[in-house]
Image 1 (tube, rainbow, N blue to C red):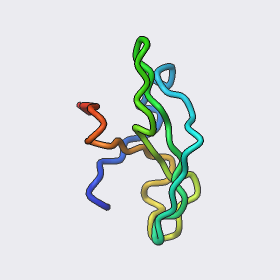
Image 2 (image 1 turned 90 degrees about the vertical axis):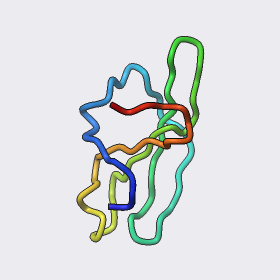
Image 3 (image 1 turned 90 degrees about the horizontal axis):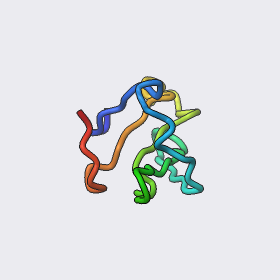
Length: 76
């Protein structure tokens, strides 16, 4: 869609994530919400995002989650 891999939200182990206050707005996808990743005592902020109410052209990624590759997270 936009060069990012989007995963079903139910594939996440939610016990390792917490809501972030950060949001961003994309002109054609809409407003994204973010999560922080918590592993042991390390927190990686704003590591993942999703679009809860995407614009019509981005409906395919509703409730799907993408990760920043530059945050040190390996998705497999």
